[in-house]
Amino acid sequence: MSEAKNKVRWCLNKAEKEKSQGGKHRGLIKTMPDKVLARQHLDKAEHNLTVFLANKKMGFYDWTISMAFYVMYHCCLAILAKQGYESRNQECTLALIGHFIEEKQLDEDFKRYLEAFQSNVKKEEEQILPMREKYQYTPVTEIDRQKVEELQTICQDILKDTKGILQD
Image (cartoon, rainbow, N blue to C red; front, side, top):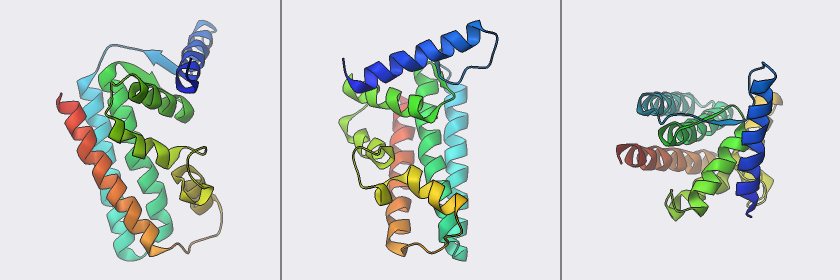
């Protein structure tokens, strides 16, 4: 069994256990496919890209990182909603996206977006999650403009691809 499939199983079990104990789940649950919620997540991703571009224009490159993360993350949540899943855990969200790629429910090209998140694929300074944490939680404000340009391209691409997925 793949690592992604194992993680998805763990996430589903975690949520089931938490719900059975009367709490709010912090995992992954199977729901009915929800095209309206999927579209709302896509709208949020588009909103975050607008904020990304505004911060870039004003020279606040450190804040573009957080917006890039959330553009990508809300695209993932849109795909999950369309497929009938609710996630309240970033690792669970990404594991399910990975599982969808493995099961050919998402195009293999979608792997490049997943790789932008995952620590086992790229160097830490190239991963969006550690970058977001660095620029959000530390006093560091300087970032290479080329990295901001790369993230803008990734965000625009994932939005375009997610729109295509939601139209299916």
